[in-house]
Length: 394
Image (cartoon, rainbow, N blue to C red):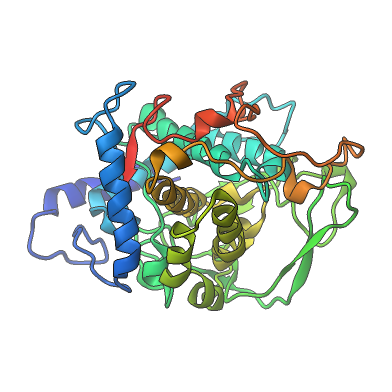
């Protein structure tokens, strides 16, 4: 994991942060202004959200003095970036809390998160639970980074429309020591149909086209990261390892899709999402314009709907989606905070272990399985400044 190496880089950045220049590849500046500027229409929605959130605080201990500010990875200084990376490696070095009898391939704390995401995938995607479940999931990760590994900052987000023309120009994917690495090594590969297990519809599949990588990530701080669970969604499902719970140690792989980024992860689509008229429109726009496309743009591990948290970029990818939802909610907190739309399973398709259960709509009183015995009601995953959460996106 080379934790000591990153601690040394962190110390170097802390010492040199205010120096006029740095030699070598480590950058400690925070004024990164590259990319496509935020359009005025999107900024108008964001400004309204920020104003309304800050005006609403003061209950359950959340105030303007202690509210946590989640920022774009590109707007963090390098000391904070390195501290985040260090904390991710720290979780990768800690033993898991999940019973290995549930998934023998679980190795560390990161796998705890990947396991419960695999376990809940057919319930929390293309359903009414997508947004609240992942909001709580992100909060769990943010809490683990801070309380178990001493991370001093807050969960950042991937500012993908800012770099839709070329994601490798962002500080997130530029391959530097303060990034999440770049593309995977190029491995020749073609298009596939990947099967999603667990649905009553046999061999339900999605297309996966080839990207520009396909192999192990070769740059940045996660080149030596070993992942264990998955993959799950594959051209053929192994009935003896249906959900990829068996140990499968391997490198972190990526397969960037620049065309998907250029065509889908745009400011135009982002603005369409936050400007949605209703929760049904919002969920449809997130699913149809953004969610799958964001995962596909990273590819390989991140594009597996089940084991996607294997790629640490997952949490920043979903923080952006949570940000869009937050901005939409923030236009009318009273009317939108607890708005919900969608079925209780993936596209309303019955699960293979309950094939005769008819489709039904999710409600805010439904329990969510967050792992390790925590089963909050859906409504607990909807506000941003209650239930122990207190954050705003900038």
